[in-house]
Length: 167
Image 1 (cartoon, rainbow, N blue to C red):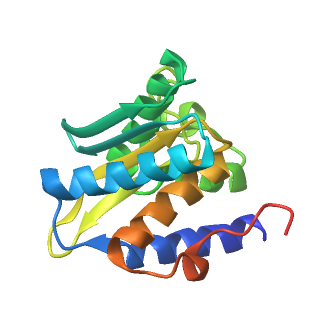
Image 2 (cartoon, helix red, strand yellow):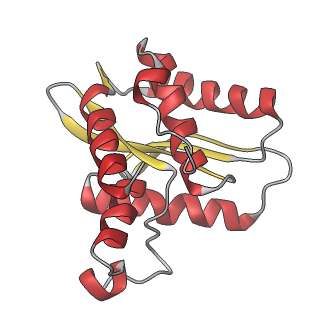
């Protein structure tokens, strides 16, 4: 799958994975689902669910480091700034052969256009926050978030997932 096809699939994910609401309970359910998936699979992840400006769920599994928390912060800043998944922003920049710093003047200390942060879109309200993980290769981080949102919303993950890069 090429960059353009990946970007089309991510746009579909962003259209389909819309929440009826985002309150503390929904954030807990999404975050807990991600933590459960990580624990079942023996993954070392940090999970963060937030309304912009308000953390609602956070966990760091054994084996993570403060760097993972920094990646979460930087990736969620990209979602807050661009209202797109951090992976979509990164792939778009790659397609245009540029960077956040070159194109927008955004410092790498505060922004990371790498996979793993996904916008939380509430029906009739728009993008109100993000769900972010850090600990896996960026495509896997992205897919794990999409998998958890699919399960939370009753969507078939097989219909929305990004294929492995070498598929």
